[in-house]
Image 1 (spheres, one colour):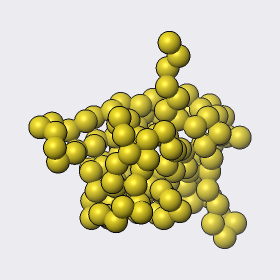
Image 2 (cartoon, rainbow, N blue to C red; image 1 turned 135 degrees about the horizontal axis):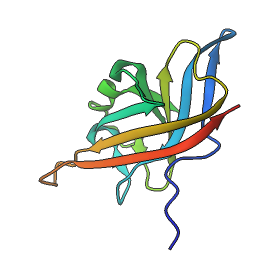
Image 3 (cartoon, rainbow, N blue to C red; image 1 turned 180 degrees about the vertical axis):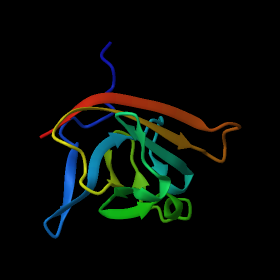
Image 4 (cartoon, rainbow, N blue to C red; image 1 turned 90 degrees about the horizontal axis):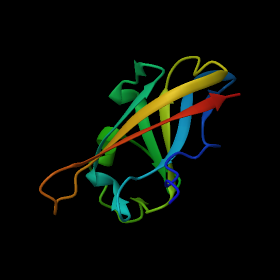
Length: 131
């Protein structure tokens, strides 16, 4: 049986604003068995090449809207769901972004459904290339 694709291999890139590289992005799927409201995603941690991103520098874009991790905790509008099998975009603010070449990412999703007695912690990691 083939492993489920977590990261979008084409979703890794630096982001540019006003001619300046201000961070990087990647896309991945929620590691849960169904679509979820953003309010139950309590954390997304990101580590690239051994360097942890600060929580306040991480945001998530779903359905065309971008939220900080703290804002996500308050989103109850069902228009902003992370549907099963759909990629969401994670943006990390980092001056200069990532250098061109091969990198390794480790990201942890902490999903806390109210009807479960424990959080769902999903460790996700892969190698990728920034061109």
